[in-house]
Length: 161
Image (cartoon, rainbow, N blue to C red; front, top):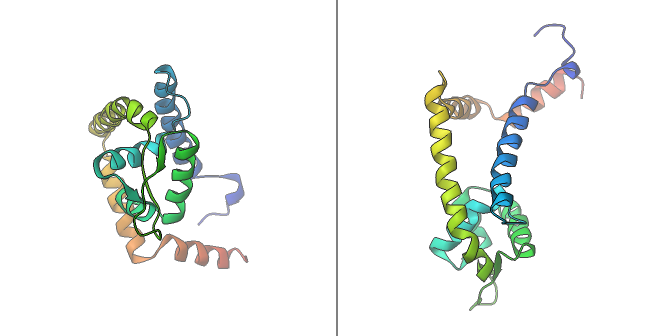
């Protein structure tokens, strides 16, 4: 590593900004279609609910590969946006949700957007010399040998933190 002060750089930020910008462009499609209050992170769970409802928060989290906590927060936000509602919970212990009438109403557009986004990402993938999927697979392989957290802790120790 060079003598560069790492506080003067950010290799992480350009990726985060790119992903944020892409999400904002997706969200702008919703606004143009008059769909207010929907965030791109809602679409995967809403599609899963349309196929398998009602679902528990844990089943939905597993289906879209996020933590229970993250899905609980997303479900609460979708509930506030009027996209989901509580479903009957026969055993009283588990909480299940289903699409609301509004969720069903906007779903066709959201499914079309999901397909269009997938087609767009595949199109971009074909235009660049190093496919996005390969980047993700290579990063996963590297992190399988030493996790991101382990690497962070080692670098933090070297930095005196």
